[in-house]
Length: 293
Image (tube, rainbow, N blue to C red):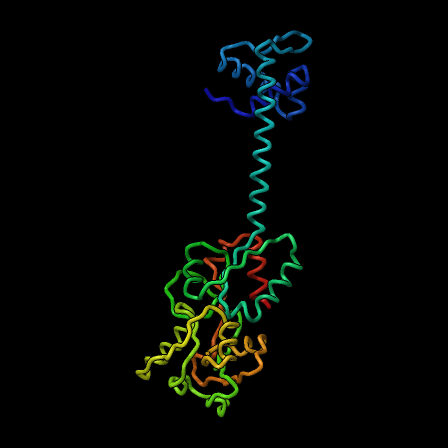
């Protein structure tokens, strides 16, 4: 036996209005359709629900019991509908962003701050990951938007230009390499280095550059952030490859920045999404905002 909510709603309305015709008028439905629904209810339940007279209708004892329970059921159904609607709207207004440390230590924070000021009802969840993990997490639908340093991958995602990014070598001011204003990365392989963990685009590039000249990198420390790298370089623990803009933000006093002549030092930061049609309304707003800034 199946009791549909519309039939229960019409039954309640009939009792509230006192006549089938008045209930039909309020519900914008034909009187015959309302009468048929009530008769079907009585058939399904195998019990009389209404006393019918020329003046109208009145509930039987069973009808009163159904009236009480039907009202509760209809209220619960509406509450569930409202809750799911709110949940849907809330999900639409949440954007999950993955970004690598290059993006987070340069332009992205200010851009996101401006965005949420423009759209204060949109909630951003920002998660830092390395570029390699970002592209595959976007492919799997684990986040809405990814911002990463362009690197070789086979992830099935759409990529768009975001920013240019220039890498260089940060060294202590008393380091022998400070005599250079620019150099190739292979010229610094004799010195201890502070490097980002594997999976980052920089780690990929410096490892590849060292392998091309049949050398290896002398790793003093493997770390997760540019700020940590800058502090270790400042303390004389080694040298490190990082974006020029990041060094300007951190303003570490006892360091010197040297431009790298390698082609890979001129990088691109990219915005990755699965497809534009997969973006929620809010995520599309952010995507358009970032790609047009």
